[in-house]
Length: 406
Image (cartoon, rainbow, N blue to C red; front, side):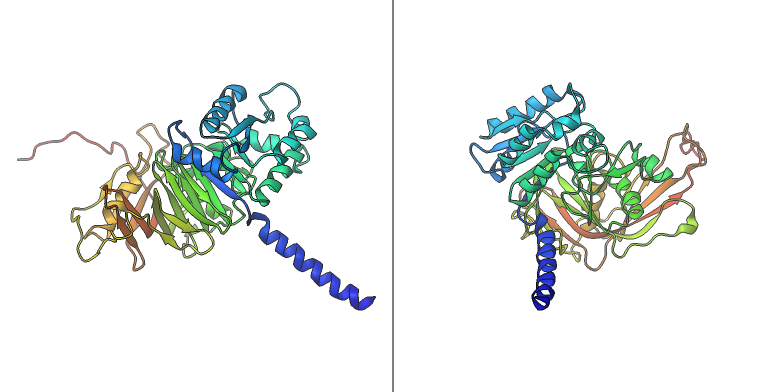
């Protein structure tokens, strides 16, 4: 009997370990950076296909929305136009009744158990976590059912706020990107616990490129000791499969950070980072989240940029690195340039706090940097560039009238 007990306990431990490792292994994620258009068939159809295809039951969770019935109803309609049998799951703080009672209602649990997918719509991500967790912080029964759906092979999708909750830490009530750089992030203020579907090793952010939010990811990642970061642009999705192989689909692309070799100098007294690895993955590109291996899309695979034959020679500079697509534009120009670096600035206006720093962003090519150009457009994919961010002093007036010299 003692021998059987000694053998049984390690076996149970092994089973529990394998179950834990495999908790994420069967299902898929579709993480949308926000502002998903009704005509983005590639993303809508992928969600339906992963949920089971024609006739797939998909529970739409409107918890984040200010108008749950209106916003949720539109998402249900879009999914159904692509062959689903989507339905609204009435779990939202802005709906009448007790949201926690709804999140533990056996009827809602049964609805999720009979579905092949779940879709979290956009809005305020704090409303999602407030609805999905009980007052004591434990999972609601609906959240447990969603996890079970994911583990048995279903799809969990979300846009904007529904993307933010995919990591175990999410932004909550954060200010502008520049203010995050200047003031830092704090648990319970700018940062809050997410639902963690992508795992504990990846930080996720959304509306990334169009709003310049790539920069605010860095203070959050350093604060919470994340090495990997995934930021997704609007009208774009990253589809993460059971083997953690991820594909970019939709309109634009995604930023991938690897901070394994990055460092920061606390003596500078303001946010700074050096040697962060930054990659831009365009539509159709893939990355394996576990290994970091990146693969360009089919229309770029034969278009690897030759660093010995640069297409650009002019200096590369931007006075607004946080502008719409500015970062990606600089990365694309630098990877096919004779210049070794590209520099961008971020700073407040003349009415800003004079004691608050601005920031210099320096992109560098490294020995392992690769670029791929599309055969059908001017789009680039840029892998493993380096980024240094340093605080700088900006003195106003930074702009003075031009005076002709004699």
